[in-house]
Image (cartoon, rainbow, N blue to C red):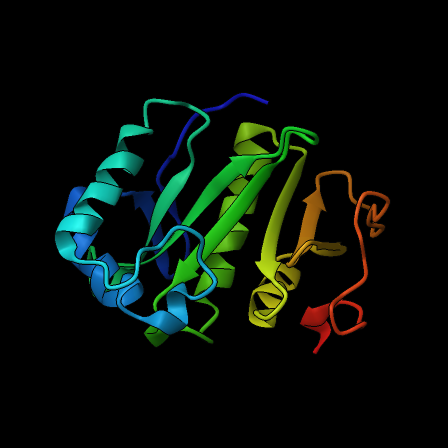
Length: 196
């Protein structure tokens, strides 16, 4: 694995680029001010103002010199440079060495396949250009839409850890998931919540 940091990625409809301080208003308008978007996001302040968002963006931007920092603004090409979402490596799993991805997109752009397009592009980037062999992502079990997104991108359900459902994709994946390190009992006794 060779870290190269957050690089520009372009897909059919999207541009994934580094965050900019000037994204603050768009992040407030499209993400932070909508409780339906932020209710499953860790660390997003309620009633986020533009100055507060500028402070958050400044902290994220300051991490870009670290080559293991991967944090993109999601931009819909037809909208110009306005950030409509975000996708990032939230943290690196110390046990598996895998990046754990997190993403969000403004509600106006839900159910259009845009986050699927962005997540697939980031998975391909991390595997093809960085040399990552495994990628993980979690979602709150009360948010099955995120699980469906992960499945659309080729990730496989592995089980539960506390309140979160875990999905992963391996470069050498042959269709089997390793559930040996997961507690697969859900609060409601069901199996994969994204299957709903």
